[in-house]
Image (cartoon, rainbow over all chains, first blue to last red; front, side, top):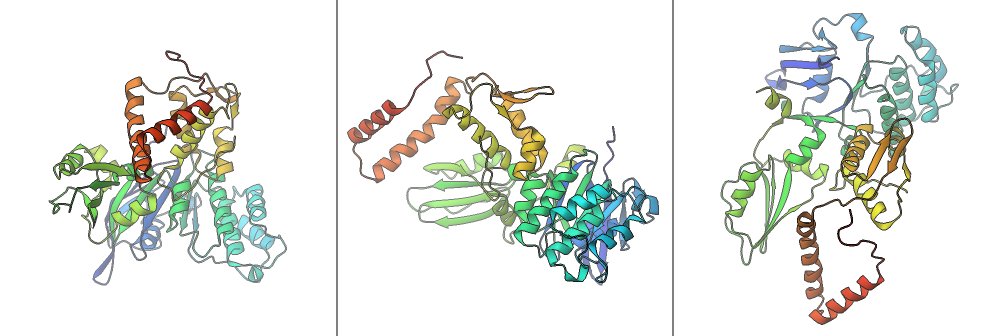
Length: 309
Length: 133
């Protein structure tokens, strides 16, 4: 049994000038499964990943990755982590095959079968020159180079960026392929909520440098609910509803989206004496957009922390 | 049976799977003894996290709709009553309200609706007898 999280940070903070890019981040990524890091552009996802890998010095706070201090990551630990950056950097003059041969020298556990399977999956010819590859093909090559060493922890920084739907699907298939071994962990940042919905077990949501959610994907979906209240006549003015994220008012109707929806929320809504009240289903994308909206209450869904209290 | 899922839907993926299997059993598309794909196979086919399929199968197994036989696969088991009478009535209520509401909007009379309902009922193969487990 290995209960220790593969990634854990405490108060991890990084400033660029006077502005915090990541602020007091307490993150825990359990071993096994797929963990998605979400957030709008500039919310601190890449900065977080770079600090985790020891590529960027934290201003304060710290953390561990595979049990090693992120400020002093030994090469042995680094070899157990696969990292795919936003920009896919490979030498243009090399062939696909050449890239694999070159990379394999650095890794004692290089798995040629995995390399071939993934380049095959993306439809790459081994003799093709890197400079002749399309963006999606290049992403496939980089993914193959990252997965072939069989990393214990795979970190992908926005792997779907700029990929067409076919290449994106191949990427997701490769990620699912990796979950064959239950002790492997994938940690990836993304804007693609359909992909997240397909593969993620856990999510973390960063909002302007601050962690707003860190929980199982299902817990997030359960927490954010939309309720439709019908009134005969004009809906009454809205009192303070706990966890209110968004209120849309129309003729005879109030459509409210709330976080931490529970019996208390429901009782508060019944106080408005609606003629009819029903929950309407909410997609992950709508839940996410409402949760990060500017007007709503700033709430936190942090089940790990709550569990420890 | 062909299970299809959609991302971006208001229904979580595990629920889309359980709903389709339930519907398959209810409509007779899936019969007792039919085999479902393994967790891994269905996850790869639908390109989703295997844990999501496992979650759906766990729910279906708890309802007694499917059974996992070690080393052999996942099978549709005896069709069982899924809800208590009371729970069933509670779930039926909003559906009836919806139906009646729509009929009102479309200017049907009580008699016309009753007639249409009876006619439809007559067309259904009703293979459920009261008290059956």
